Length: 251
Image (cartoon, rainbow, N blue to C red; front, side, top):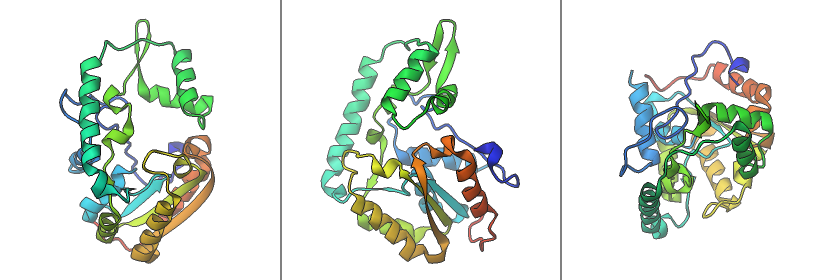
């Protein structure tokens, strides 16, 4: 969306550890969203993670944009399932580390077919864009950049209870723009996160707590609408960024 975005701002796109062009974590170091928050803080010192950062460091964020992504991931039975999640995360990490083999080399065609097969909402053009960031060229073809310990994102997600969600929202100082795609993330059934009533609770909590500081926009498209329709999404974001809200946070 960069070329369609408001020109008066400086945009920074981070590759977290284990993603894209960033280095992988060392063996034995798990990927947690809270760890990714510390990565943002390290960069700022000079999606779902941005929301968590905004709650932990509220004084540093003036405006928060949620692009078809929740501010925090809600789990109604978080307390009951917490130990199960922690165990699953550790076991998955150890299993992947024990079975890791040398990076497999693919052709662009192979990777594109694989990506499109596992992401039915992606078109070929968007798939090629993602592979530019997600692969590295070697003599025989392409290798994937992503750390295999991230092959199951649910094992690095920090789920929160309704009580903690509401408490976190009360800590926010930022103006929040939530852009939801009609056929996006929240319409894809996920294990332990399929209840649309949870989405209603999250939006209601944001509205009732932040009041005029919260803006909700629903647009046609899927989770990759920012890539397939960048002009549309960029215009909404640019309008939000350019609006002269009262600034309460500082860097």
